[in-house]
Image (cartoon, rainbow, N blue to C red; front, side, top):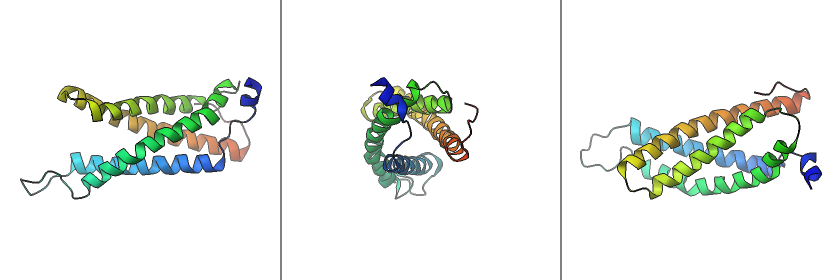
Length: 159
């Protein structure tokens, strides 16, 4: 079975497309919500939100994120485990960085929704933001290195 897992570690096209599209929607809605919540102010002293689209961006982010977690599980099974069993360390560092930050990002995102202490919520929010930024950067670099390796056919140095 390990030999079968090691044979092929490239994601099928549909999994790759859905995974990247899902994370693009999650990232864009999260960035939009963050900007609306923390970087904008309203002139209305009685307003509950800083921008009319703020609740919509949060809803999109919270609705789509579990689908992204589901797809991450599929990718983990079909790609990450296989890559870990291979001897070649090409692109492993960025893959492990994005996987680790994804784990912390996911756990902190759920903690934001269930915590009741203001201190725990604030810590979870900033942990979520920091690990989200780390994930987006690490995964972006992981994609770039992966495309360079796949399309140039040469082994690139592992980061």
